Image 1 (cartoon, rainbow, N blue to C red):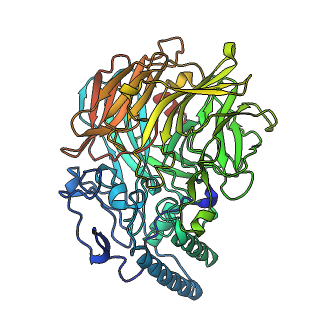
Image 2: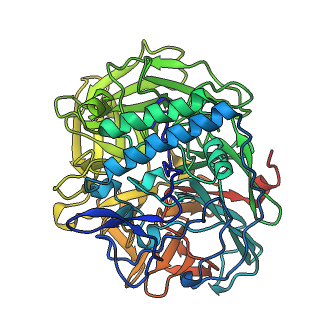
Image 3: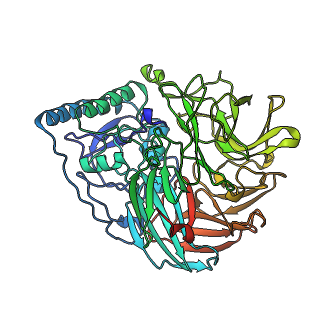
Length: 600
């Protein structure tokens, strides 16, 4: 989400019930109850997993690894907590706003929450958050670690610091990065919150105050939350002018910096310490060059080493901007992309010469909140299209739009040019219903791996499923060999998102023939995004010569591990046993030891 909607989080209130109340979700009513510990033997959601919600008491205290997590009980790195210094006017305003927010929550709890905003569904089982984990060295290893793997694998995810009282969507959680460092056959693990401006303010206050974009910002109550939040800003109780994002989605290593991103803010620079720990350096604007948000899936061209990115706005034009960074971090001028309405644009693609920009049917209509709806809307009357723009463009006059009816791809895995047919080929997972991640619907989600051909001569498009209907499986989250991004690739490595939203394994798909080879994690074992790590950076070697890295969690014994699988034959080469549970998350990256030594 763009910064202007502030993918805000954590609207837990300071009222007499805030430290003792828990929403009781019963089939017939919702009421306040005295807090009882979450029981891990009773499923609370359609995910059929025990609830493992562990949140700090108020005011904030760093938690330890929960005892029912079957993990090592280690104190997190100590942090200093201090109360904000407010004057009498600010204190009075805080009390009044808290009273108003208490009344708002009471009204909200008179209505059942949809599954897309129910925390007992969204953060149940291994979707539940974990506390920070300082570095644990010398982890047990089964099998043999490939000698070519030296560096750190990092994966981002949503990990709410505070217990939700009202609505919460999985995407709303605070960003946490999990890191496994491999150094000459030894392995260590750590996980840390990315200390965003929002995270630091809420930690200082000891409770959440930023509204949550998906779980809370809908209907009249969403409007009320925005007004309350900005009122707090007027009185100086919060600062929303220096970032409101969660940095929980993407990770990219560029210009000697690891950047954690969500499309509602600037990136955050996170540094890997020599011991393998993580520390947040701060909000990163590329030395004052970046003045707007940046989406969570920028692309690095493997040959030019440039980084390409988009930024979108949901309130004012231009709704979309394109820009790029040279390898030394120097930014190009923004290119304003003409759009008639704000569009949700989570991902895009690059080819050797172009950027491919999807303008699809999931749009932002803030006025829907006034009539009681969600601001994220599936517009059935809109025609989906792809914009083809030269990478080095300085304005949008050369953009070409190619219509692609009823196409919505949350992620695009690759794209390339085929000059002989005047086509740009786009590989993506086409999702229906398009807004099912954000809005509750009765139709089952379906994600179809597709080849979309955009003809630059005729302006027409075609689309076909790559896998036959008889072998269909939901494929979401994954990648191609990043050394060949933007060029023709034969293989994609994608998560098998079944039973949705869990990931039971990954598929190696031949994009030319549709042949599928699977690696299944096993009974009640689930993972996340498969990350393809080439054996080396030699583009002349076989495209699938490398390894698939993924976190895997066993729901029978609540243990997690990092698996390393040979990408050529899909055989498990090694697994690293982790000291704590790793929740299911989003996207990751790998930084080799040479690059680590050159960190800024």
